[in-house]
Length: 447
Image (cartoon, rainbow, N blue to C red; front, side, top):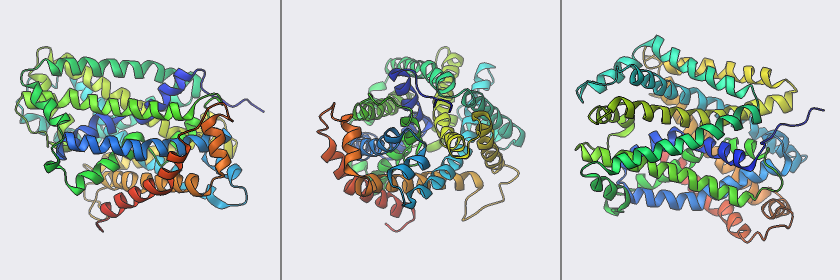
């Protein structure tokens, strides 16, 4: 039997796992969520959510994956023989495909803007013109589909090489570069006149600006940012060494992921305030507001290019981890080669991704429940699959998994103390399920 692939080093495992969490959710979504919800107060609630929700749910996925060294279905069948918990694997696979399908469209936006930056087509415009540039792009079917498919091709080339030669090697290069670029941007932002206003907005918690919606958004952002609930971390942790401290790695992933999000805020808001713009710009912040800011800086083409390279790295590391969910399933449960499994996975993704890209132009009239295809997939990924997955994982490990398995995994079979176990179990049993239900009820309009 062929030996199962795995990470060559702990550093590589951490880089890949952090890369699975760090993505557009940190650099694109987090700043505009913070901007719309009052800045500092939102960030404080977000950090609390990471501690009470994020780390325990990360550990629940780590425990399932590392205890069996199998994909989600194989792990649940081994941990709970005779029970049909493994059926939930198919929800995770569908969730990962849905997530990648809309996510890759946004990644295509990043690649197009990177191309425009390199060729100088993104500079020399009035601030108002950048809205028109974005509208022109998403209104072009061939450009939308071209860049979406190109991004997926790059993903495919990394995925087909496996864990060590593909995912780990890519993460070892991209994650250090991502942090380096972030630091460069932060230093530049802090040197801008009036940057202290952006820092005050970001770090001074004005709770008068925080609403109930902001609290729920912070909880949802914690799930989205850490990519919880669709078994990506189950899959990655199945390749971890048995000597790895799961708690230490979970904290490391959560801290670095949060650090990237906060640094993204430091990178963006001082510049926004320095140029007298509104922090509540929303999703258009990255594609319509920031290019105008870069254009007004000395060496604006270089800054814009580096920024979209940063976004590209973040996009690629996240989508790779999401792809690994279905690829590992096909390899281990269906017995196919990795190349064939990767191809099978991408056939499903390409169809939905192309439909998502076209939903801004030729299919814009096709709506379901008032949403186009892109918006529907985005809603389903964020508000259904991730929340259901997070709820299932928390309840399964907190209530149904043998407590002996939890202790063995968090203590490495007695080698570590495991003082955190009561806290983790309490959060998984009570805190995480209640929080997920609150998010879901808010999203469906009950609260």
